[in-house]
Image (tube, rainbow, N blue to C red; front, side, top):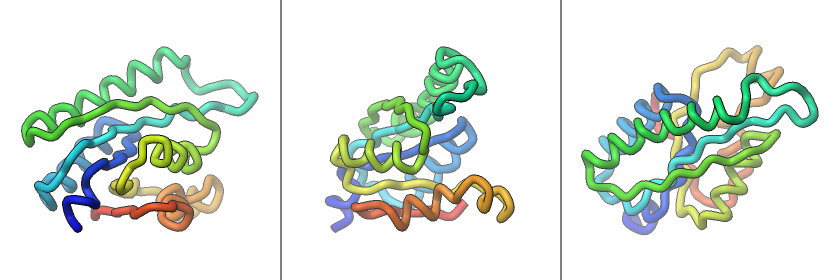
Length: 140
């Protein structure tokens, strides 16, 4: 089952630190990895003003992917990059998992306060409860 579960891993990554932590946890737990699909969501404001230009955020995504690439090179794992755009991060990740035919979604939850989760929604909780495929939440 391990080989089937980790055939196509969708790895949502939000920052360089997040990518490093997630890769460390993933690669220390298994060596039965097929392909990692590193995915970064550029959140669109949905009619509002975006925080930074799309170009700046795409450059940031490339820096994040470099961190994933480094970990994958060391372990000989194939990696693909995907930048996705959406107004709802959870929905965008889940749509990406469907389109990529990911066998599992793997992430380390990002720390935030209960207050922030209440106001903005808890992405980790939503991924686990709304996914139509296995989700592996690794400890931080």
